[in-house]
Image (cartoon, rainbow, N blue to C red):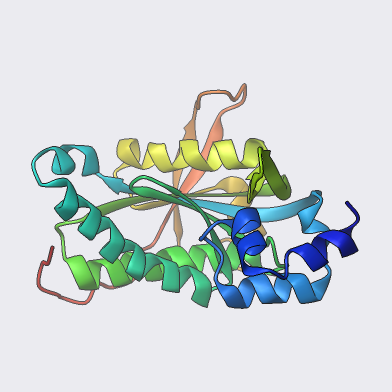
Length: 232
């Protein structure tokens, strides 16, 4: 299909949900259609990818009713997703107790690395304010070139990002368990920010699965936490 034909088909609500699932808010969908973006067909872009994961959620969910575990996740995402939107990010994919976020696609964002780091800080602040110390996060951020577009089959498609940048972001998020930090960013992301020497502490280089070369990471300085009662 040509982009114009696809554009016309996507105007129907059902088709919009088929292409993007429930992860894209209506305002973003409308802007995508009006912009005539080639992101539907696939293109290579530089973006910043962020993985957010809940620490210890598997153990927690084993000890509570499934409805309680689901309620906790929904309340958590009610905090995280608005922060993502505020900073121009796209909540691309829910991964159980985790979330994949993209800055710079499907809509362009000039300073996507800065936006991702600032967003991570706000998420830490807002989650601490709502949940206190009862809920811990791990956040990994990486920057680079990926392929973005819609992928799928059998009548079901969704917007996605593909590439080594995504895999490394996921590995960096896992590294937070080793370093004890909440937010880790790669050296690539750090250099892509407007003030690379501010607000980070080096954590050294680590070997990660699937990579020949080690990955250098930096911890992001956390904002001051507002005291808040622990809630569930």
